[in-house]
Image (cartoon, rainbow, N blue to C red):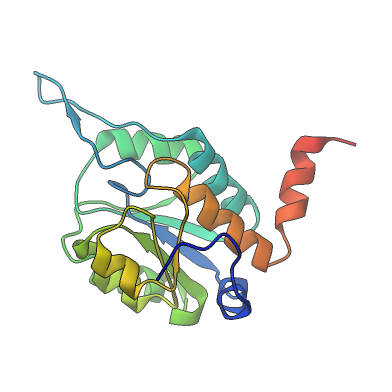
Length: 182
C-alpha cells in the first residue's frame, strides 16, 4: 500500500471506530537502532512528537498499548512518563499478545489498531481491524497494512497515526485547541 497524505473514506471509517491503539517499539516508536553500552545498558531514542501523539490518544479516551518482542527498561520508563499503562514487553508472538489484550479490554478487531514495521509484527497487524505500517517498514508489512505513513519509524510516524485516528473521530481539533489557548 503506498503512503498517502490524504486518507480515503474507508480508512477514516475504520479509524473512527478505534478504541485500542497498539504500537511496536523498535522501528516504530524508535528508528530501530539499538544503542548498547559497554555495561550492557540499552538506550533508545524516542521522538517527542510521537510521545505527544500517544498522550493525545490517551487523553481522548483511546486505550494505548505497546507490544514489543524485547524487554526494555528504557521503554518502561518512557511509557510511564507518557501515562501508557498497557505494556506487553518480551512478547515473541505479538498476535497472541494483541489478542489477549483485546480480550482483557473487551475490544473487537474493528475497535483495534496496530502499528508495526517488520515481519514479527504481521500477526498483530493482520489481527487488528486497522493495520498501519511506517514508511520504512518491510515491504510485506507495507503490502498488508491498511495504511502506510509518510514518515519513517522513530521520526513522527506514530504521531501521524495518532492524528489520523483523532481526525476520524472528530477529536483532533479539540486536541489542538488545548495548545492554542483562547
